[in-house]
Length: 121
Image 1 (cartoon, one colour):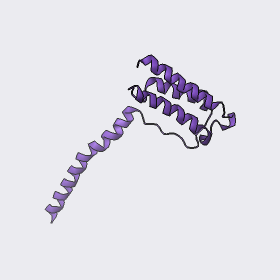
Image 2 (tube, helix red, strand yellow):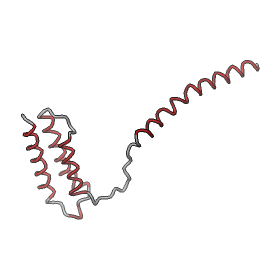
Image 3 (cartoon, one colour):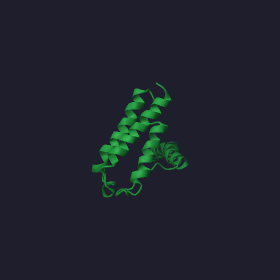
Image 4 (cartoon, helix red, strand yellow):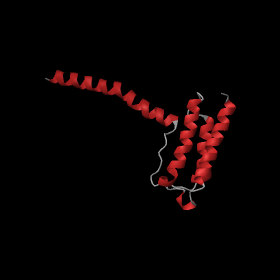
């Protein structure tokens, strides 16, 4: 099967999702209990066919449809709990390296203090 087939099939997944979303009223768009089925159907369809056609998942085309669903239907939904994102790479690197660099210093300090206490005894 070709990439064209995957493109056609993902469009069918999207069309089915749009059809399911026709039953959702504006006031229900942000209620997970209402939208979870259509959203899961879209995601499941995209993942199933990617797997069936030996495409990696997630892939650019599948992500495009997921983003499209958020942009078209869920862009006005606010989260009760904020979403936390990873910090920028340089901050993350500093947070990882700083404790690692402290370890030799702390080991040296412990050895030095233990020798000092033995000398006093």
